[in-house]
Length: 123
Image (cartoon, rainbow, N blue to C red; front, side, top):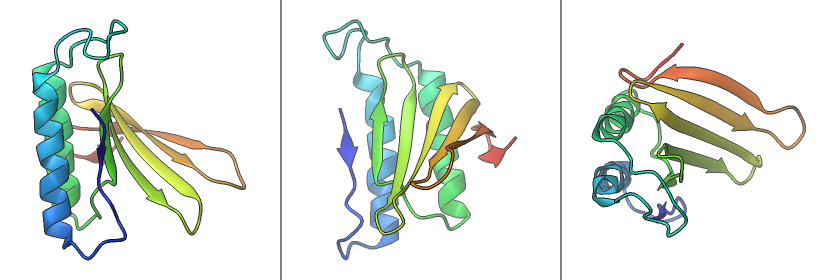
């Protein structure tokens, strides 16, 4: 279940945020082994944390993620790509209320920061 949200189309940011939030909410239908390779079921508390983080980022005027997807460990990724600068930003919601931001640059070391997913604040 991979939710590509195209960034080059004329769809308004509010509609893109609605799609991202819908994709987060739909992760609750995934059962254990959803990938056929033993993936963990994503807890409802983790889904709620990702949803609250997305709402917080939207309210702060951030652009919507271009991709929302689960990992087989039972975590959720929100991903942004800046194609022109070749920068990828990912937030992995790892446990209810907590996650990690990863920013990957083409010309320097990748950066990692903890994030409080209950309110979207960098720790």
